[in-house]
Image (spheres, rainbow, N blue to C red):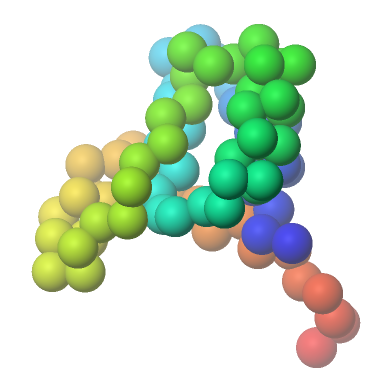
Amino acid sequence: NRGVETALQAVKLLPEDVVLAMVGKVTSEFKQNLDAMIADLKIGHRVKSVDPVNPVCLVDYLSTADLGIIPIIPATLS
């Protein structure tokens, strides 16, 4: 569980000018689930899906954000 669902729910609670950019590749099944959740939460205008970024450019790309999160939910206590 990557915790992306939790991040989407958080967007709903944040100020309207906050946009979540999800960087990376997702399966078509997972994308369908995300799209449905985004529609249910009515946050489509605040969520952007971005293709994977070349590792050479990653730091520069991510440095344009105001905030970065890695929403990984632990599967174990250790």
